[in-house]
Length: 391
Image (cartoon, rainbow, N blue to C red):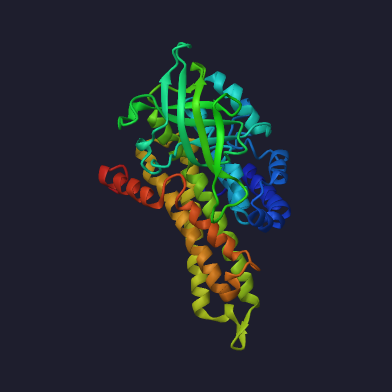
């Protein structure tokens, strides 16, 4: 059992750390304030070869896998979770294609992601179907004019990167909308340029500004048979895709927690009160220590989960371990950002310091790609079913 990163991953971590300090850190507050998509950071990520980390070399990526992408995201998220989200979006919509897509789909859609010439987004949630995925109403009907083709109609919401994407991984009901059967949901690749595809309302978010989240409207969109991902009736594919994403979302939480704690620690070492620095008080030291322990525990959970996901271990029996990483790291982000605000006191509540940005950004992580409550349910189910057991 080896707890050290390989030399290649250490080199990746160090290079992304430099990039994050030099490029991301100076821009983080402006991105949050304006909400404008940071094309300059996208270009920097492209030039550094970070957009294809999770894609195999045969498709133009670097083959660093989910672990490599998690390591990179952790570094970027220390300063900007919006920038980290840009990297996450190289895997979330491509995951189902990597897992179940045809060779032709992979060759057609994935090299552009690695090269930065194309971007993608993931369409699962709907206004009445967030955690309740089977409540989706987007419908796919057989296309009478094309054998094996489908016509999609409906609306997706809360889609990160929806405005910038060139194509979408979209899940729709291929049976009656009221059906709760798992074989009633299918995944499709939908191109932005197709007739009937449009971006609707863009959301006004509390945090993680800079990468738009919004609606995708599908109005009788004709999808050719070659754009069905895997088999018709592939609800399991949605779950496999999300399961494999747990460590990547967790890495955003770890990075945010690290950034918040480091900033707050520097502050309390300089801030004078009652004749000494705030850092001299034992109560403050204990809070810093507890947060540091949580960060290291979260990293171990997350790196283990990433290694498992890279090995294809994201089916049911491995879900508790993947969910633990996501749950612990994202809840830690909330605690660490709250601690940072508290350690800075009134100053932490002001926009003069980035603590309030971390505080706003952190909450999103406990909601996206499976809420904390969903993760707890999955972990407990693993114990009850014996997938997570200790004898």
